Length: 307
Image (cartoon, rainbow, N blue to C red; front, side, top):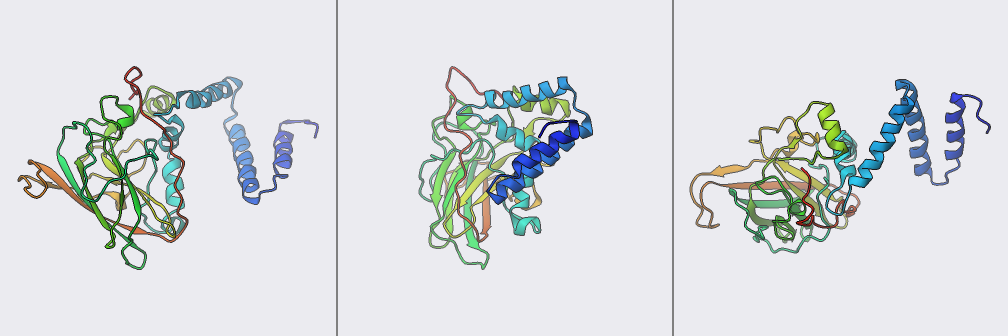
């Protein structure tokens, strides 16, 4: 097609994309072209603005490393990650769900742990935490043999991949639920933390005049064939940023009941104050699938992670 005017550009691209054989890919690409071209027309994007947009997209890739995923961070900062999550869980967005974003810090090689083990692998000051988890299916039956990844930031607000001073895999572990669908672990209470703002995501946050903090939370990923993989975050209600998460991830269903105890625990060997959390997850029927890990390793001492 010889282009005669600006309207024909969209027609030509739509015609080309219509030749894609895979029906779902064709549907996605056709919608992408229509909405993207419509956006350019709506805002009358200038050449200078287009050049800046190209630079920003390139910078997302350039900023992404083995220990940091700027693209995933941007998806959350624009609300795309939580929207995709809510549309695809809880009866396709019709009911509340315990699902949440994967986030940019999950590693696929987290170490195997036994129920009751600690996630603390290097000195990590902070209030100690005991977590008891129970899993059941939609019929209320315990889910045994599920693999559950757990990870969280330190009380200083850094994941181990961001912090060379933390031991490899500190505050990470992979558990298997027992016949009763339960397991437990010990750790330290996570803190809210600033997302890295030394790249394009930081430019966006500053432009919107928002703070760049996430409220404190624990990450969970529950995997068992025959059930839909559940990715979740459980938030601490006492965090000052619980209602202004920079990644738009906090839902009512995922505010956990972190109980403070002001007397030492002889059972767990915890000094006061310490916290406990009893967390119950209900798994939906569906596809069991492990996502692609957004990071693959840990920052070196010579190249500290930007915050």
